[in-house]
Image (cartoon, rainbow, N blue to C red; front, side):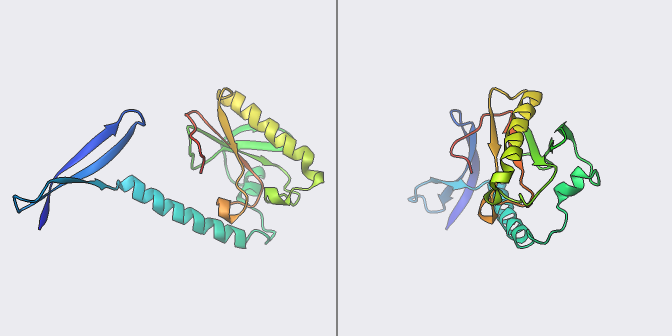
Length: 181
């Protein structure tokens, strides 16, 4: 029978990650001591959060064509408060309530015009798509991340799109990793 005798943390300086190990010894003196990796609680929570995010995306997709106002429509109408970073007559940019980076701003068109996801973009949307990208650049400038930022558009449930009102995520303020996702 093996018994856990100690818990160790090792820091990988190159990757700045912390790895946890459990030292296992058997009561039999001929049994070799060994280390087993221990999954961190944070890692397990991330898996759970990812599963929740996927489930929420599926529910959002099922309700995407209901015609009901989205949370973004309510933010545009000022029915829901937001921390606005940039606004003009066609675009609104505001801080994400669940930031995934030190800077995480959402950029949305003020008029949905059928543009619930990128795959529904038509030639008539070219102007607003350009304005959204230009607004992302302005947000990066305002936030002081012009030298390095990422723009993400989630499209559909497989990409975990949770609001069916086209929106860009502007992420920065830390080193971005590749591959994304």
